[in-house]
Length: 129
Image 1 (cartoon, helix red, strand yellow):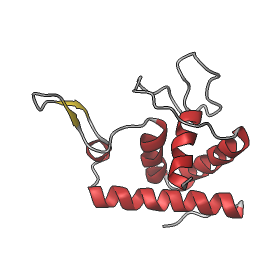
Image 2 (cartoon, rainbow, N blue to C red; image 1 turned 45 degrees about the vertical axis):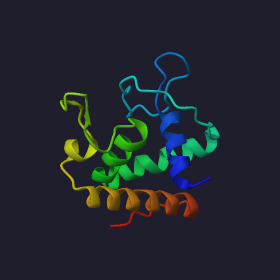
Image 3 (cartoon, rainbow, N blue to C red; image 1 turned 90 degrees about the vertical axis):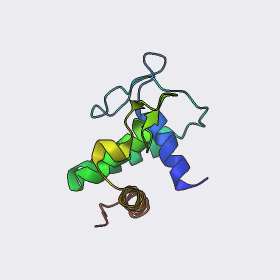
């Protein structure tokens, strides 16, 4: 299982399921809009709480990375704008919402994921610039 899969699983763990499960432990994460549900194998609570702790550190150190990480994994927003059959934007994507280029977005996500891996493995705050 890749670290990206672990982040996806953490995103499902970190968001409440609109009353169908226990609410999120993180009060900083608001309820996302209802989205298509995918079957995700849950991660252990200990790992999820450790990732949550690291994400809170990320929020303090680099808010831009935190916002992109949350939009990607907790809110599960699309990267690109979604359009209907009339080519009208129905949901703005991350690139439009944050005003970043595709290359810059993927570079920042790589930095966020690498920083989280380092924090989890070293058990200390390590944020890459």
